[in-house]
Length: 227
Ligand code: SAM
Image (tube, rainbow, N blue to C red; front, top):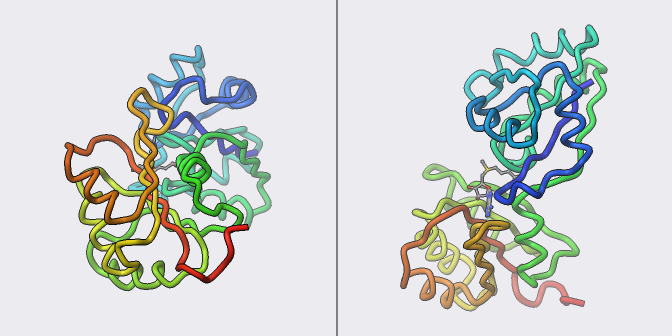
């Protein structure tokens, strides 16, 4: 069996008792970065062997891992932070397991977009998760598509691209569209600011933007009531 295990996105208290037990019980923990995850597991007193499983070797390794899982070796999959498969490696392995009849369980747990979406105060009854936009090719097409959505949408963005992203969102959605920048969630310098895109641009232009960021943007105006 493969167990997909979410790990904290900042605050080390954000891991479940079940996640810790599973990580102790499996034979192998597949990890995006064995050094980062080694430190994390050490923090929880977990001594299970780690094996590298990341975007660069994902394709090559999937079939062999599924062979081992099929033969009865229990494994867990973790990423550097949050839930594997959510803008992180995991999908290819899970799909291969599902296709070959290997049981997969994904534990509920930490991920960045849920607290950002909920704390934003923007409608969260229905939403679109976009994750990272392409840096170059296809970016404008994607932004145009997102601007026309009838639902709140969620982006992952790096701090050095935030201002450019807010500018582009303003161009496509209009400067008055409500949005939220959720920065450093669950960490000491957490900041969640909901305002118009123009106000967010002004706010984040006045400081050196650092940390990890989720951008939440409300739906096209007048397409749905906010209930
Ligand atoms: N698998 C992760 C998840 O479940 O959310 C996402 C991994 S993705 C490689 C990393 C991105 O997630 C960051 O660039 C940022 O956009 C977002 N992120 C991760 N931790 C965050 C945090 N503590 N606060 C805000 N955003 C965060």
